[in-house]
Each structure stands twice: as C-alpha cells, then as structure tokens.
Length: 140
Image (cartoon, rainbow, N blue to C red; front, side):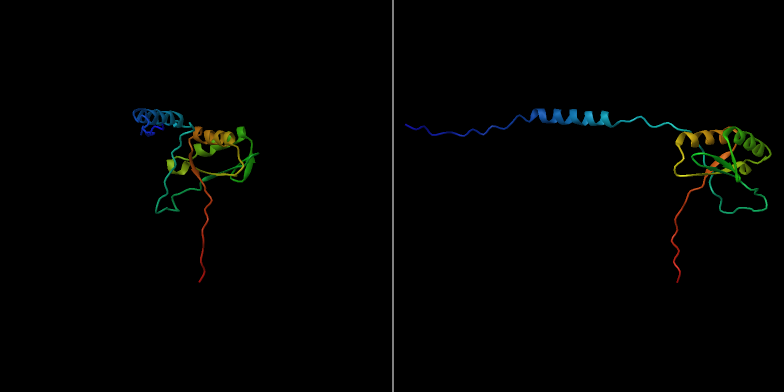
C-alpha cells in the first residue's frame, strides 16, 4: 500500500537575516574608515577683480623640476634658494607683495615640492600655484 506523500512548506528562519545584515553593515563601515592624509596646510590667496598695476610689484616666480629649483630664471640649489628668497622677501613690506608664484613640472617628486614650499613658507612668502588651463578659442 502506497501512502500519500505530504509536502511540508517550511520557511527558513528569517530572524537571523536582520542580524547578519547589521553585522555586514558594521563590518563594511569599519573597513571603509580611513585616516585622512596629513600634509602641509596652505592658505592660497584669492584673485582680485581689479589689480592696480602701479602699486603691485613683480611677484617672485619659482619653477620646480625633479632636479632643480629656478628662482626668477636662475637655477639654484636648496640652500642658495633659501638665502636669496629670504633676502627678496625681506625687502617687501606689504603682504600682497610677498606672493610667490610656484610652477611645478609634472614629474616633480612630492617630497621635493614640500621642501621648496616649506622654505617659501618659512621665509614669509605666500604661495600661489600656477595651473595649466586649456581653453578652446572659436574663430568665426
């Protein structure tokens, strides 16, 4: 004699699903928290709408390459750069005259750039970065 087979509908326990989801959320939050990178804090000057060319003196220009530091067109080592920059900034009295324009080559190592920035900051200069920008000019 063949007995009829009954199918039992059994649901998996759903009580632990919320616990597992909560634990996974905690796990990913802990893994995703990253310490912020520390660097040298800098205050960059804002551009002004009107610039008085009579009162504004010529800004110092520093070019940084992977192998050299160039101050107003003359290549220098770090010690000579420190001396010449301090002398040039000491002669300037107004804070807006102490702006130093920094240009950096793309392959310049970060530690070299930080050393030069620190020298400028220690000498009392205000660092401003010269960035390359692309413009499209349409000619009619």
